[in-house]
Image (cartoon, rainbow, N blue to C red):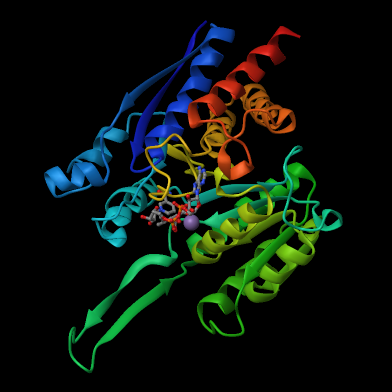
Length: 358
Ligand code: NAD
Ligand code: IPM
Ligand code: MN
């Protein structure tokens, strides 16, 4: 019996279209290798170019249009000419929030074949960062008062609900239980005397339901140092929206760069589609020249396959990425190579094909 998955594709801006094309190349390769799987996609031309023509980042009923899909595959959003807070809020953050994609799963793993900038003895890196993705510092609550006057004030209020805090921490514990790993909470209760004190209390409460799981709790400043000096101490990490954003770019820097870091925005209830995307942005500095590394976007395809319940394929895609890295002959400039985006994507596809021939 054929299984068909419907994917809404939003290539977006800058390098987004270049890297998502390679993600689809991998899905097409899987279709060839496994005729029982079908990936149907529909492309949505939303992004900054769309904004320049229509004055909005997506159709008014865009969220309705996306609802029936099994997943959304997104490249990147944001380009000079459209203020970032408009482009990102009207498209990316709108999708994350409308579909209650409250879990942001970001693996920070040093794959074989990648040299970390850390001294090798410190470079034992394999953590799963679970970032709260629906509220916190990104709640969008605030105001601009007395604009343009000397009394001007900007307010940006963090919103940490019991429901939102508890469900993300619980999600992290469930992941840790399944993997037999520890959970580390990263917060900042010493300075953020309401929100993060509350976060720490909820972490403590939830941890009581998981007596077999080892827990650690760090302040985000010290945690940032330990990411660099002793990353091996982190296994499953749970943290707030903003801290998770920053820490995962730091993690990416330790494990091969933004060209290699993937993320999944998941609604675990599956009531609405989840969204898969590299964690990097639209990289205007290299866009349009086939210079972008597609491996992050391909890794998010691996996460999408896991989410579809096709874990065996998810794993094979990750292995094909790793083989591409250990072979080292077809890599993009950010990884020290000379290959184009398309050549790097084709290399992963051919690694996948040759793995299947064995
Ligand atoms: P960025 O991630 O786009 O780029 C940071 C640096 O990393 C740049 O030097 C870039 O060339 C490099 N880089 C990123 N991805 C790469 C890849 N795949 N291969 C090789 N090099 C890569 O971050 P930025 O420059 O801070 O932001 C640019 C735009 O992207 C802004 O508009 C920002 O708001 C937006 N942004 C969007 C997303 C998203 O859509 N998920 C994420 C982050 C930033
Ligand atoms: C990310 C991005 C987004 C975020 C921006 C573009 C709003 O940096 O996915 O990491 O902060 O979540
Ligand atoms: Mn980010």
